[in-house]
Picture (cartoon, rainbow, N blue to C red):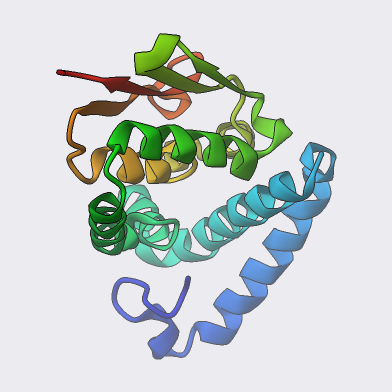
Length: 196
């Protein structure tokens, strides 16, 4: 995450120092939040959260701009993949005639991807609606405890909303209707069949 820093920080000879700070902080964070690991998926999400926070700690003294550091971290947590994800979804949509079924399958996949640490629940509301809700967010909890709640907007559901909102789906309304990162009680993806 460091080499592409604004102003080429790593290229100014600070690379070894930044790496040392990141590794030390990463280890501290992993130890501090080890109890949040309840399955293999939460281990992966904790790894990403710790890397984001450790990178923030290393870059902030150099950039001195919380927003710029957040944007840089956001690029590496999925923001920069928006174009690729949109292209991929367009290809998948072309191959799948029923976009509603495609997105229901995607929601069930997200439930499995996040694992139990996010307290997911998937519900089908009749034949024309499905909802995936996360009652807890490992990212939001860890970022808030470390004094960096603004990083939540770059992680978790914010990245996955690209799959739902990044491409138009024929006959489907798909959106992230609420977000813990935006101050809501839960993150909720809603997929609804519209039209005939």
